[in-house]
Length: 93
Image (cartoon, rainbow, N blue to C red; front, top):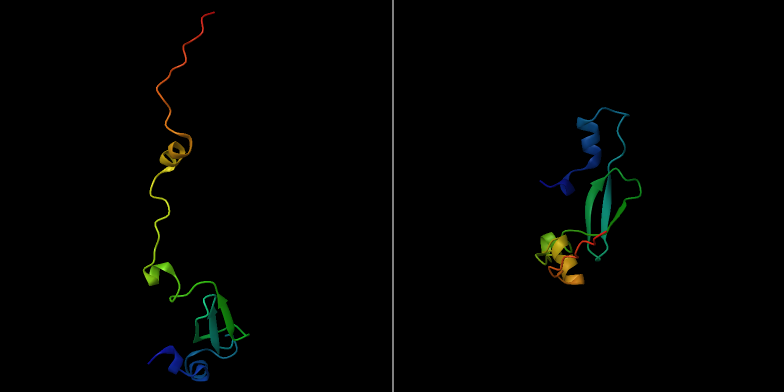
C-alpha cells in the first residue's frame, strides 16, 4: 500500500485527534524539469513547485560533475603562476 492509496479522510477520522490538525489534501508536485507527480500534503493550494527532483538531480541521474578537484593553493598557482625562489635581499641601513 502506498501513500497514494490512502484516503486522507480515513486517516483524519481514524488516527488523529479531531480539530487540531491541518487538512491533508492530494497535492501535485511540479519540478522545474517538467516532471510531475502526485502525493498528499497539508499545503492548501494543492500544488508544490520544486527546482529539482529525482528525475533531474545529478545524484539520482548519475551525471555528477566534480567541480573542485584542486585546493585553493593549486587554484592560486594556476591563476598567477608558481613563485620562483627569489628572496629579496635585506637592505642595510
